Length: 444
Length: 184
Image 1: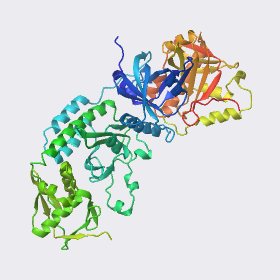
Image 2: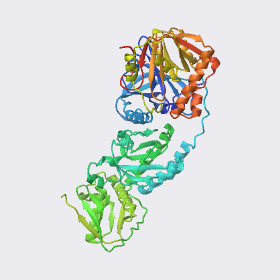
Image 3: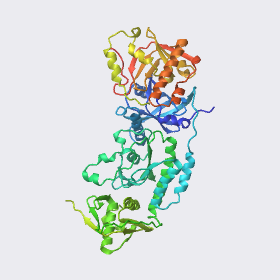
């Protein structure tokens, strides 16, 4: 029989069941303790959480070796691993992955506030031995992840329109992976924020809601550019997404769109979307059930996120869709004009008293609505927006398309008498179904 | 790890031993309450070491504490072979006992241990304590099928590992974990 590999027993490193760690000091005096977290690093390495400086820690630093017992969380099969200590990481992507996972484990085990990650101890695996004993028959996987990934690639690979691509990706994840709750957020590098642009499976779409870099599983995945996966979602504040509670002022609360996530999630997975070195956004999926996303699911969805990064970058380079979209804003039933209120301090726009949007997307709407009232012109181009200094568009204006999608989708959320239609590559039209009045509100 | 509704803390065991005034079991390091805890159907894991410093470990099935202070850990011979070999060669022993429902954990150590053939009472205790431990696993959320498989062993292949503990340590996760459990 050939030797066991770490990849063959990877599910044992999900830390759904306790592991045991034995060490000894320089005189050969043994020590054994339970282990809260073991993590797969690569085919030759695993990482253990370092939470307290204790006898285990002292022994490992002295002898640089340990023995580990793990079991498969489904089949119960037990394994003994001989491992050699290499180094401790006190920050960085792997540290953040383990910190998030530990928070989930702490919450699940009633140990909130007791477990704190001081470091990720990296070990090289020297030998793996199966321990004789009874095992349960494994149930076949509900789907082939490789096939689901291939079908997803095929379905999204030829879409040249960013807006359609975002929706098609979430549809493909539902169809091919059975993921019913998910969202896509795009990164706004000016404000260091992620903005929700497409969602599936929530009561309110939450389009336009924002997550700061480093905030919750989504923000940490973006900041560290590494997938963050939690099998038992934690009540730990640092990972919770109750963003409404964080609003710093009445104004912030008034211009905040509630984050649409599940109220009581069981499992969550956030994957960074990158194009080369550039952060494009985050793909986030979740489930009300715990233990829904495993190492293999993360790998499959990481491939989808990687493919998506390339496709989004292509869309942004080509300056919007060639396809034409229609918008049919509803005329107001009252004769009074619809008032568009603009607050220049943060470029927020209200329709009547209802908050619509802020930031660059708000400034764009204010700019084109003003132009329409002054000149009667309703057709605009991406190019003129890019060249308009008043809009503060960054030099690398690849996010213009994302902002137009955001604006278009926010306008579709309610029965507002305003809409945006795409009329061709890099061109769009403002459609207004009622009389419009503009009101700029000063700082006082 | 499993869910603990009311997690224990290391200080509980450290304080309890400091404040204990009565006789210990066999005049050794275990209070009657600690001995009771070890024999109540908890998770048991053993370690020894092969020279110069290669640790080995194995799971236990149950524990008996005798009046003279001797601790007997019952193991499934085939699953515990590396530890049995290391102890036979003269290695020291460490044994940790842990209850999933509270995470309460203690560790006992001794410089040596002997391996013996298990008797009928040993096998009966291994079965009874394994079942109690399995019930505890189910109570904290493991599936009954999983728990039943986790604790299953062949009674005819049980071996006994005897040692006289010379030190005890609080192993419950939290501040003070690893500190010795000893009189004031």
